[in-house]
Length: 116
Length: 115
Image 1 (cartoon, rainbow over the protein chains, first blue to last red):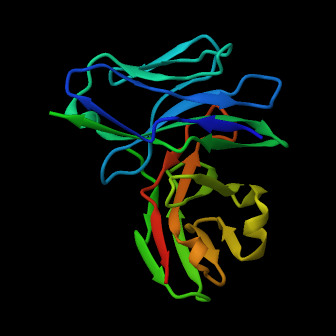
Image 2: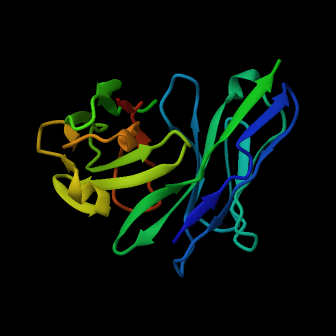
């Protein structure tokens, strides 16, 4: 079945440094899955950070970027300069139609801690 | 910010007890999902609805879990006889339509502890 892999469970970065959170996926459909990054800030619910539904395209939001790379089956999240307020848990996810319905499949999440 | 409302935030039950949680989807969203997130941060899809109709559900929900989304009432997820392994964060999410490109809007979740 489909799966999403985030290799880093925890990442610690100093404020103003660059960030990359890795995400690779495996999708079984003949088309291309839709790719998402969701984020959970402390004390808040899960919310969409960005999404890309077309292979080769880049999504961006709040200074974060992710490019849908179908050759590498990757959707890494990057930010040039992180802030303390970016500390949160980030989840990579994919969705595609399966058996006439669809669901969102999540990675295991990456806890980002930004040090002042 | 999401306007999906889940109640209660915390639920503590003994083994064998019923556990019921509710969800009000965002206004105008006919599609509702329930997910279970365990202590390892793994998400498990449980069931989804479009209006009152079940679209898809996993085998687990067909046994001890039941869910409904009645018209003009909150959606609900109920565990008939709670087990220790059911301890998790239960997330409700809603969406504008059933297409896979649509964004899911999540509630804050109900954290169930089964003692």
